[in-house]
Length: 403
Ligand SMILES: *Cc1c(COP(=O)(O)O)cnc(C)c1O
Image 1: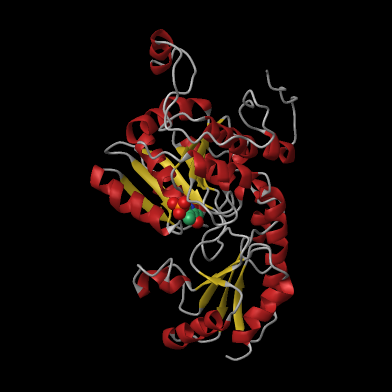
Image 2: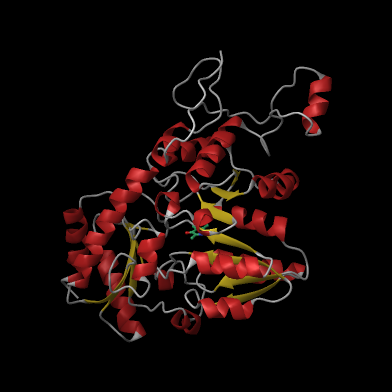
């Protein structure tokens, strides 16, 4: 039985539920989970052709699996990328990208506000292999330009950042990268392609932690890179084949199904986050709210232009208490008075999550490094899920009203 071919020119919403490899002979309506480590070959000649790349065909799930291929096709369609490769985690996506693109003597320019493990991987682990890096201000385009060297191969940005939601100008950074003969990679974890499509703004590579909004219900750890056919086929797949930071087909299937509801989740969670951010601004015990959807956000206009007019689902705020001791006590009080919210450092779940960045995601930094990054003890981050807004407000008020 041959599957129906998808019509040309479908919209993103349609591709989010339809893009996949062909159905099997059974005509399953929900994409199948091929939980198999290897694939049998009809005969030795065919096997030889497939192993040498002369003929397409599934071989071994370290680098080819139909469930992973469905997830990759769907995510590539959403990002407007030619191709995608899935990885075992968001960090292994960064690892695969750096292994594929960089060699000793190369240089990377990276925002100083990217995900902590990304800072460590590029700044410390790859430094061991002779890769140099310069970390620059997230928001100052001139600082990125000034950091470029003749050996710069890669610019790496993440926007908005965690937890302060600083926004960088993807189009401007793409221009700097391309003038220097380098590539621009953007970690699109916070916005997802439902809100922001970096490739349409000039980026060459989109990095994903599928663990967050792509799964969307906090079930699996996963990652992916979206890029041109040439980069995926000639640069990333060979590294994957040798190094094996592969995504389990089971986890690929969970993400594949998560992508079907990504658009409506991002809309609904962003709407709740905006309402919560506006409400937090009015509370007397809240001294500052960080959310790109607020007109008080320093890069509000850029964010609205770059993110489909939505702020995303992460809201951070400072509570009263300017000294570190009092700030920490007050932040802990608000968090510990909640009865509904999940106290955990993940994000991207439909269950709302609350955390104090200074003692969790940014706990490995020194107090001086945290202050330089603007992350004080009185900062709280909320990753807004799908609960009713009134229940979220009531849960936060337990602590805010008793400070
Ligand atoms: C979580 C996260 C990562 C790492 O992803 P894992 O799937 O946990 O490895 C990378 N970047 C950002 C922005 C993240 O939030």
